[in-house]
Length: 289
Image (cartoon, rainbow, N blue to C red):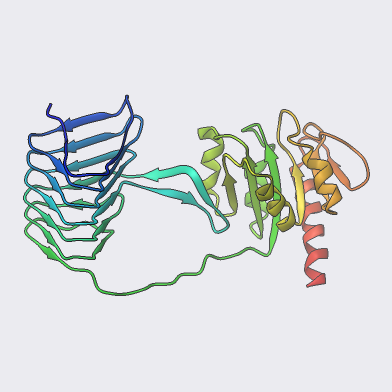
């Protein structure tokens, strides 16, 4: 395997030791290049691939480029996005999909190529294009100037849980039973694939690696109630903080981390009982609007 030739000045290179590189001959990055290849990611560059000044390549999963393809100044290639919900954007959690670019292409200056795109062979892309869909071989593609604005829908009612466990009692049932309620689940670390799977519910929002206390305070301020349904221990005295803000706390007997005024505890195995109490709180809140 050949090495990438970094010519000119000021290159930012961050290649993980356990990434996989497949580099052809005479691959060149000119000045001010930024190249990131994450742990476990694959970067495949064919012979004589050329990047002009100020190009950026961010590889989290797979970026593959065929031989003799040229990139103009300022081209940017991303095979991943930050994960996000209608309420937040993850800092270091991503969704990724491979980017594949064929041979003998010319990508014009300041083009941005996004995750999941496949570009065929012998393609020319006009300067300043935003490429978010596949382009077939033997094509010329240009991008129109169009700004599309879409609303990020905001729910009316919100519940919050801060957890160090990936097990939240009856979370799936409650989310299905209460579609009018937005569930905000925060963790101070990365989360397991099991907990991450709950992001498939339209009203469950997951926040990972939350290290800043003001973010937790914002989530508490938004919440109409606090759900003490996480297994393991309480995190950062969150129940007292919720009570100090006047937030009602609801829990199952098995998961309750404390008792007392302002805390409603439901019998284990009776999620409908907890859902009914949540509906009562929502109804009371709704009457105040």
